[in-house]
Length: 417
Length: 86
Ligand SMILES: Cc1cc2nc3c(=O)[nH]c(=O)nc-3n(C[C@H](O)[C@H](O)[C@H](O)COP(=O)(O)OP(=O)(O)OC[C@H]3O[C@@H](n4cnc5c(N)ncnc54)[C@H](O)[C@@H]3O)c2cc1C
Ligand SMILES: [Zn+2]
Figure 1: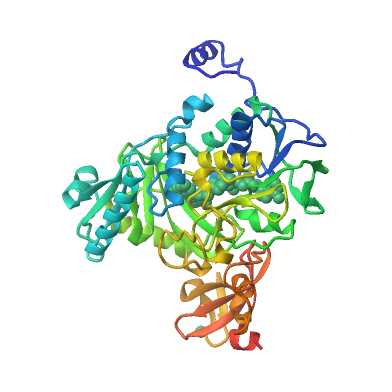
Figure 2: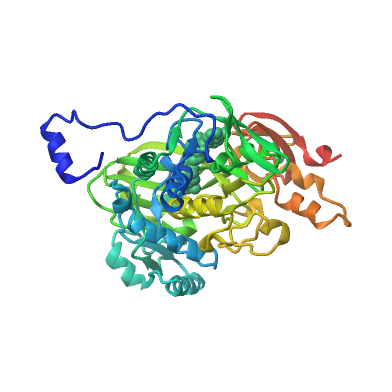
């Protein structure tokens, strides 16, 4: 069923009785041309672009829970292309361009809102670093505007500009940055993939990867064995477990990242604001809730919930930056399992097993990557060659030391990101 | 989370810095090849379940090995890193 304004009116007048399911609930077949393990944002977009760009429609997405139950439905929805290093820069730039056409492409309202992202700075040194980043963004063809203190005040008059520790000196504005509705992105890609013939199979956990000689031949699942000559591992926080089924040990640690939302308020925060020094960022959802978060809890975790010290830290940082939110009541907090790589950049690559591909290492920034990650993963699975904008996301960069992409410049070690 | 420091007793998680899994107790020898170093610096078992990791108790300076379940966050044991390394 195609969604349109006309359809909305017609169904509204007919008691909304005519809507059909957005995707089928198929029984897994014994074999496919390709299997994608993981029904998060990246797995669904991979399946979608396998069908759309490469005509490979005999595809199954195997999801152990329900579609969108992982990080894709738990993130704080920030979409931006403000990366600095070659490798990341062209990839996220490509992703943002895909975002800008996504609603028409999917015939689905993903509520992509380019409300502008402002990264605050508090010292001359930080300003210089942002000037450099802004220039890199402009050189990539994306947009960046340096704001001085008064420039920030025009956009965000309600901040505390004179905090003793972090007085606001200015900010880097990325006008095309913003947010999107996270669930809708998963649902839109799911529906688009299903319409092109992809089987989306939920409650189907992959428990083994079958290899014959040096080739992958299929997987074992809780719903029986399924054969395929190509298999993509796209399971975010669970990457280490699934890769271990193929005898691999990954450069990944799984960590917990928390987020928070308040009760719905009238429109008050019109941008995405990032307060890096306080490890705090915030935006307001279309329902009115203030959506905000901070840094990792900094211990390995698969619990999908965090501990109080980070809750306290995030609240303190929020109060430091914008005391006006102190009376808003927090409705919910939750956590997601982040696949942290040593240099903070992702991996989209072949493995030592023919036909087995790996997509992981999204750290806390993989939501904005959903379109381009699927685009490039599909390209890799279909052609066997890395896509040009993801050519540097190699698995062996840690072993060789060539091509490390450490945006933070802290060092390519697990405990440093 | 609370962790029992062998010197100070049960202490709040805020007093600790977590360094990650206890790989650092198994530093390769001087003549180990690049692959052994790659393994040591980058590769991790990253289990969903019990994990041995290195924690630092900031107030007293003790390095301890904490056995912790990464799914439930339950702490199952704490040993001085010096003893665990033996
Ligand atoms: C609190 C929080 C805030 C964030 N904020 C942002 C943000 O503002 N901007 C941004 O760009 N990114 C953000 N992220 C990061 C982003 O959400 C993730 O990087 C991204 O969603 C990960 O990719 P995914 O969507 O494919 O993951 P997931 O949705 O986690 O998908 C992986 C899927 O694999 C499935 N799976 C696992 N094991 C198996 C198995 N054995 N068999 C079958 N299926 C399996 C899981 O059930 C899951 O559904 C945030 C994350 C969190 C937790
Ligand atoms: Zn102590």
